Length: 226
Image (cartoon, rainbow, N blue to C red):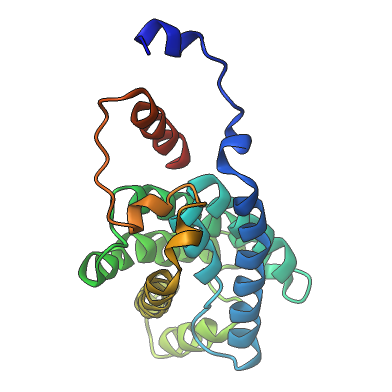
């Protein structure tokens, strides 16, 4: 098929190209985030565990589905903990980053997966600290604020206390989350991966863009990384 013919062929809408299984994965990701987030809140843990589903769906289905999972999750969690709503942008950015990193193969080996902890922690740790300072003055009703208050009482400036308590703990949170996501990805059967937008990344396929079908796959990957 010539390049001109391909350009004249009608393109499916973006969401149609994601497929029905992606739509099924979104509520699963939201439920996973909800369970993890509520567990952390109930146990008053200084971590969140509310981005497992976001990163998982982003890695398998692309950045936009991952971001959607993150946004919906924060809306639902805000029912019992209203302060989580203002952090929705963090989960959205994490979902987008997961899709981009997955497309580039960063979840295919354990070593690469561990490296993704750094960008996720930067988004969650520094971004979350900024929101906490700007909106709540540094103290929020969660386990992290206990550490923040202790640091502030010991003489640290509030800005410093927020970053010292939030960033390292977010690093731990994302480390646990990434390990969990990697283990789940290792267990996803090939027949399911074949039906997911970024599933081919985890199936060891060598993609060569020298045919119409593979060129279309490349274009689709570019869309799904958004």
